[in-house]
Amino acid sequence: MAITLYSLCGANEARPFSPHCWKVVMALRHKGLDFEERPLAFTAIPSVENGFSKTVPILRDGVHLVADSFDIATYLDEAYPDHPTLLGGEAGRALTRFVESFSQAVIHPAVTRIAICDIHDMLAPIDQAYFRQSRRERLGREIEEVAAGRDAEIAAFPAKLLALRHMLGHQPFIGGERPLFADYIVFGALQWLRISTGSVHLPADDKVSVWFERLLDLYEGHARKVA
Amino acid sequence: MAITLYSLCGANEARPFSPHCWKVVMALRHKGLDFEERPLAFTAIPSVENGFSKTVPILRDGVHLVADSFDIATYLDEAYPDHPTLLGGEAGRALTRFVESFSQAVIHPAVTRIAICDIHDMLAPIDQAYFRQSRRERLGREIEEVAAGRDAEIAAFPAKLLALRHMLGHQPFIGGERPLFADYIVFGALQWLRISTGSVHLPADDKVSVWFERLLDLYEGHARKVA
Image (cartoon, rainbow over all chains, first blue to last red; front, side):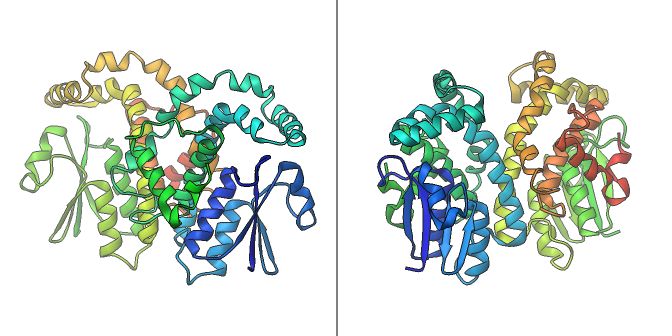
């Protein structure tokens, strides 16, 4: 296979959990491209591709090496223009940045506060030490302090998805009648939450839950198989 | 002039304030189309175009009559495909719905709670009576009760724009290097707040303020002239 996706896992390689890597998994399936996924522990990332990137996803496609999920989506649309579009052209690409910003600025901090200890518990000991220190530096607190607000964060979580819920009254996907990369962006955040905590913490009849289940069903239930 | 835009005003015709009508004003300027704006009081809307729509904007373009700002943007892209695009094609149109949902579900309720009494005060007496009753039916409370949370709502307002602020770290407009209808959607909400209360209630150095000022400058400062 020509394409390799380096993604992120904990002690169990069969449970890759990174939101950014899930965006790319779904993007590659959307494009209909064969690929091999190689999940890495946090501390193993610098050892692949001569330390090309400190973070995953990293995509190797023949001679091409690309990091960052948005850059990878852009690369895939440019390299495979005859396969289904991910970004929907220049205007679509810009508008997708807004969806990414919504996910990163509104959803990711909430998932972090809900799932931080669950994520820690998925890791092997050496990666737990790395995770604890890097999150202390990034968040200015111990992970247990961050997790202290978990119940309140879960209670506040559905309201953060108001814009998506409202939009789902108009159309089944952010991409319209079919999913686009923008769908996979928000999907990645909820898949990260689902895999690390076992739930997306939304009522089953919430329009967002119904949309998320539709995405879990795509591509022979690829994303549903990891739990 | 072939195009007429029916918009919304209070007692002073020179101060049209509806967010949805401002989206269309900016869209028509973006398309480079000449038009005549006819601001109407709330209670005058049923008297134009044989009661075609209960709400404005209403666009009359020759034999074509279109209501709803999003439908008008769609119409303009279809009717004037050689003029600059507003929605960016099929994918862009779907993604723009997400921006619209963000604006309607997150920004509009906040602006309503901040500006409801200011809007009332802009209206002629007959429209004040209509406004008071229609808002009582829609919100289940008197407008003064809604406005009781005004200061708290102003304090909470900057956080509601987090996704847009984050995106502006990547690009100058939601449309990328140039504005698209998605920009005018959020602009309309802030212009509604600016005209009715005299301020957008954001620090001047907030990236969102800087973006808003860029939009006020467009088209010979068209939107800045109304205050």
